[in-house]
Length: 110
Length: 119
Image 1 (cartoon, chains in turn purple, blue):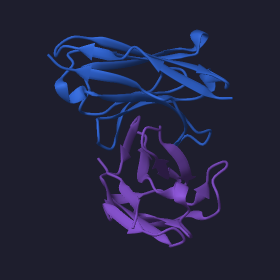
Image 2 (tube, helix red, strand yellow):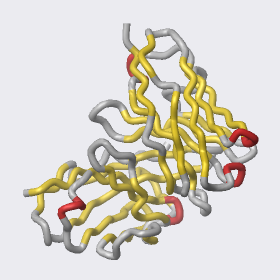
Image 3 (cartoon, rainbow over the protein chains, first blue to last red):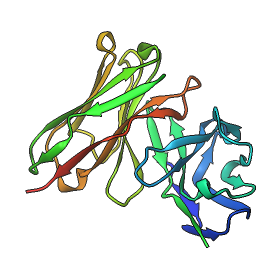
């Protein structure tokens, strides 16, 4: 089973700053199978990035994803007040279904 | 507009059973695999189970295998999760989630139904 590790656990930044979130897999993951979600308190998760680097519908271009193999990154170029939330990476396996989420990175206001 | 509405949660004693439902609308339900994802209070997301469009492929997390059963009724646009032998560690908000057309991430989620397992 692939284990996802996210770092840091908490990122304290100010609006306007750049956020860089890391997701590391215990074994190589196809880029097609790596996604990122945003979750705000009391809300369901929201898909941000799929296929490691493709933005989902309606996601602002300040969000970008990159990476391959075992190391993936979510970057928020300039934090807006509404971006302070928890972010999860997710990988999808098919044996037949085997989905795992990372533990999350909380981005909070400094 | 895509909508996923979960129901069936509640307070249940350890060892008892509960059946969750997810009513889907706004898309062609039988074109997509569907999944259940849960979130314990104050914790992260945990995948629970998934089912292909025709119920031909099904998967479970190790933590629920043998106790939970996923199913769907395409005629009713509905997804189900039968939960037996419930444990206190099954306490969580249970979301149903729709797979994207590409099939590897979840583009729509319900608001969740809360399951509390306690004596």
